[in-house]
Image 1: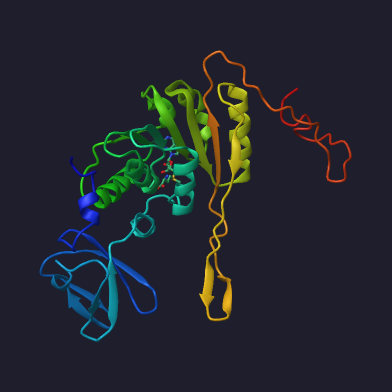
Image 2: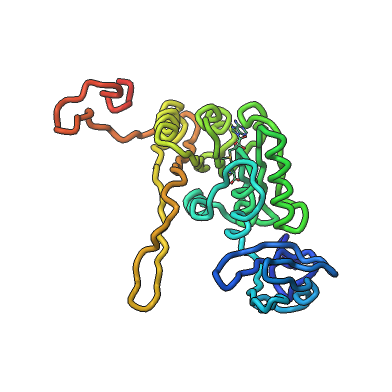
Length: 300
Ligand SMILES: C[S@@+](CC[C@H](N)C(=O)[O-])C[C@H]1O[C@@H](n2cnc3c(N)ncnc32)[C@H](O)[C@@H]1O
């Protein structure tokens, strides 16, 4: 049985062309590609790449200035945060949520837009594997190019399951029988008609949006279009901990906000969505609220 694309790049001793992530004594990371005959330079001396070629992962190299660096291959979460960016990337914490709650499985047929820098594309490709299909749409040619380079560098060449189209999703979406659609863009509501036609019954739409106003408009538009069940919306936060002696506490810094996620499932054609009944809106002190969306957003 042949290995999945990219697997050979991620196991065994270091080889020419591998990505290496160095960690210095202060925990700072440096990433580079191994080339025979080259030197890696730091402000505290250098060392030849050849010292790492053939060495196992987890080796320690010393510079001419006697500073020790730990050498490992970058994990995908490290890689996407260090790769060149066009647009803002989906952070690993959100990619993990998308893989779990949009239920991305090996062999799945997935559509994604926009591609941005290719962070989410890389996570999706790894999850669907060589037998799946990921068709990614990106309206900006320059971003599509950056994403293509990032994804190909990570997998060590073109991924057999990946197709990348430059153009707006809503004007170009040609796929049918799609299991999952992931939208990370400014105006997902503009794509809902096209996405609804592409998804199989039971298929999942997952949207990642940065602001509350985008979230509200996306959810209301999904309700309006009628071919999805009631969307579920959430955000996730990760708080790292400092654990040292008696100082066991949350880190002082964290990523405060990335975005909101929502999922909704495609209903069978002609089915009326069994929407939750929403109570009439109340103001902060329980008084009857008569402002915008006083009907709870139902339009009734
Ligand atoms: C935040 S970036 C996506 C980041 C990407 N998910 C990643 O993880 O690297 C949003 C991208 O959507 C693209 N975009 C916006 N609307 C689009 C549309 N209707 N069709 C295709 N691409 C779109 C933008 O050009 C931009 O590159």
